[in-house]
Image 1: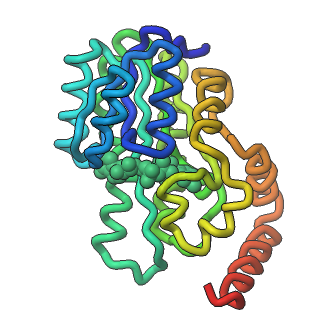
Image 2: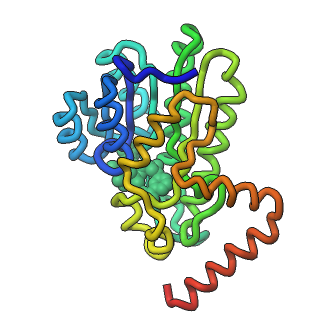
Length: 258
Ligand SMILES: NC(=O)c1ccc[n+]([C@@H]2O[C@H](COP(=O)([O-])OP(=O)(O)OC[C@H]3O[C@@H](n4cnc5c(N)ncnc54)[C@H](O)[C@@H]3O)[C@@H](O)[C@H]2O)c1
């Protein structure tokens, strides 16, 4: 089953810049009708450029998600594609403050849970709906330097997988977008881990093209960096070897003083 973007009603969170804005531009070019959400006021400019509807506000908390979905339905009719793309990537380990752990969990995981909760009754009633979760290669592997990001992206992947396993036979499709570095504000803000990914970093426009080609297809994982499939397989087949390799990388970063 593939997703027809022409005339589809699509919601994208975190669309004020980066991957979300690139998805919006590509989907608009393919004829989608869009609601673009972000905390950042810049989402108004992206929406104006594309003739889309902007919702400025929180797209993670219970009230924010409910409001976004209600407003989207009033603009689009039923939502055909929901892109849970907003994300945060704080640097830090186990010692990250409680409020940082909590807010990362809210945005990277609970935003997806709350959106699915609001979308599912109507999607199940009509036997159709597509949920795109922007996760990260960190959700399949890990990321050096950010425990909250690694843990919550694993959570987001687990939720997306659970959704698909549970509702696939009822017409719900779910895909998890898991890139490594993408040239956005986020990559600039994540310190040594970002620097490590810079050489292979992709443009958000490239990622949006990969997503559009894969949307609604048979692949659960959308991997703009194909090598991630190999890393994931290695992690599963020889976990100790993979952990030793990642720890070596960590020690290299420490030796370099980062
Ligand atoms: N850039 C990368 O290297 C990379 C790699 C893998 C995955 N990702 C994921 O891609 C997604 C998009 O990130 P990006 O790289 O485009 O970075 P970005 O920082 O440009 O975009 C993230 C957007 O999410 C918005 N946002 C954060 N919290 C929000 C909230 N509560 N409500 C509404 N909007 C909120 C931000 O304002 C921002 O515009 C994220 O989920 C990120 O984890 C990024």
